[in-house]
Amino acid sequence: MEKVVYFLLVLLTGSIATNAQRWLDYRVSPRGDTINRLDANKHKQGPWWIRYEEVRGEPGFEEEGVFLDNNKEGLWRKYSLMGDLIAEERFKGGYRNGTQRYFNRLGQLMREEGWMAVDPKDPYDTILVPDLLHPEWFTEKIIRHESAEVKNGSWKFFDPVTGDLLKTETYKFGQLETDKSPIRIKKDKD
Image (cartoon, rainbow, N blue to C red; front, side, top):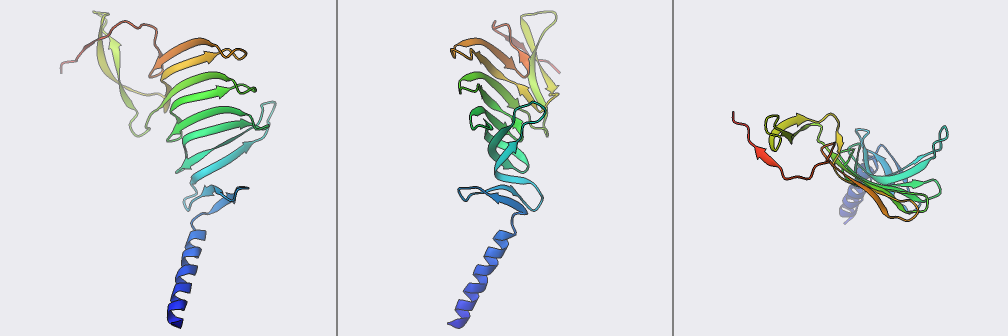
């Protein structure tokens, strides 16, 4: 019986020791959660809370969200130093992706932006290019993105006082869309 108890005690202390060595550095939040964790490769992992103080006249802010292998992932919220929500941003692989929302000091929506993250390992995409001889026809072309994140989707601007929609812009792969006429696609023949 003593051997069984001794074995269980060794097993339990071993698992506690390996759990404690899993993170190089971390903080404990007031709620008791483990935040701001660095793994053995010194990569940021899991929930993080970051505070930026006021610098050279720029207001400070705090942000919270999740890191995955040193990259921001999913929903991140940004707050003023007074605790007011000023932004909700979504990330994929460390780059903005999806709808971003920005608020004024009274909590009213000022603008919504659409972004698309581009995988740096595969920075190519297919776009439609107008045919020079026939402007109503378009040809598919493969392009390389200049940036890892591009404007994509609807951008809405709101009146800060009334909250009314002032203007809407639509982007496709970083280009402002102006014409809504039907598109005819001409396939390249190799």
